[in-house]
Amino acid sequence: MSVKVLAAELGEVHRQTQLIIDDPRWRDNLSDMPGELKMKLEALLAKAEEIKPKLDLEHDLEKKAVQVRDLHQYLDSPQYKVPRGPVNADGDGRKTLLAAGWEIKSGIVYAPTSAGPHPMYPERVLFGEPQGEDEQRYFAQVRAGLQPEYKEVFNKWFASAIRTKNEAMAFTLLEPQEQKALSEGIDQSGGYLVPPDMQAEVLARLPMDSVMRGLAMVRQTSRDVLRFPRIQPAPGTSSGMAGTPGSDAGSIFTSGFVGSWAGETPAFQDVDPSFGFFDIPIRKIRVATRLSNDFLADAITNPLTFLSTDGARNMALVEDQGFIRGDGGPMQPQGIVNAPIAQMDITGTTAHTISNTTANLGSATKIMNLQYALPSQYQNGAQFLLHRLSENDIRQLVNGMGAFIWAPGFDAPQPALLGKPVKKSDFVTHPANTGDIGLVYGDFSSYIIAERAMITITILRERFADTDQTGIILWERVGGAPWNIDAFRLGSVT
Image (cartoon, rainbow, N blue to C red; front, top):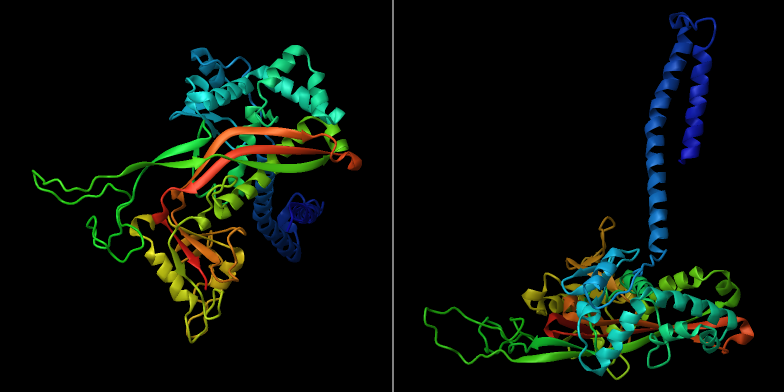
């Protein structure tokens, strides 16, 4: 019942009780009131006491609803903050950055956003010396974009580009010093660097809509390749003794750092850890949209807010597609289902499907076998990732009595399968053909996302002129790959 209805009901009770006690016949002495009116008064007061806590509860719920709406509006409204003074690679630059609400922690620079501080750059990008031509160009662009005049010129250029429907003409309309400031943010493909506070709002929203970003390890980089140190895994073992082959697909140990109990003067065994590097190339993501010119002409803040929110949602989907299904080629990251990860059969009683019958447990036992094939050290952080329709298939697996084996708990805070969280993505295949991978299980912190904060924007000049629209493209630099394939198992059908 709403606050309005309960308040009206309580008001009516109050009106009736007031009429009774205001009667001049017994107003001065309520004991003269007839018995039936006393009973009516008591009933009305009892009803009032019954309504009051309900009304208080509805008031609290309304307040919470307002808070939720305010929170949604807050998260949906980008918080743009660039330093008001120059950010040079010195102590004064640090002070200027910190005064604007930015943070520097553990060698990473965090930008203030409406969703909280978000990691943007390795600290050396702003305050260190670049190594190589690639870093020199990137460091220069980032530092130029952090200066307050860059954001002012970018906003002026963007508004002019929308008005003239021509980004080149908008550039020529700038003053010479403005052209110089903006040209420092032009990347090799001709796009303009988005001011860092707007970039931060886009990047901060990606985990809200991306499955993989919420599971994987995200690292910032200043180069076109994130070179991550890696120690080669030890040979497969089953007894805990290094180098003893076993039946496991992977290793009991997480790396080449294996060992054994030793005496005071242990004899050295030739089990040297094999060091190496794990390279994650940075790829480019493009998300494009068309906006009506009337909408774009209303206010400069509207399109920028739209790009920060809706653009991030589309980037998140493209990222998930690559991190899950990418082929690892020159244009895509290494997707987890296409990595050389151990596969296990989860085919049910019907070919190419996850299924079973009361007479044959089919996929049920195979999914359990897949879970227990993962080495113990990865089990604590392990989760399932699958298509929503595959989860539906699994929920319909039955025991010999026809009862569902893994019926979802209606009061559970999140779906669980075999005691582990379940995440869903439509980019994982719903099995229908031989070889389809329908289930990923493992510790997703062993998948690394390499992020280079360098979002640029391109305006399409005349392509949509006939529809009175302007095309806008956002470009993101990001890559990804599984760092430790022993931390995963893939379930496929035959």
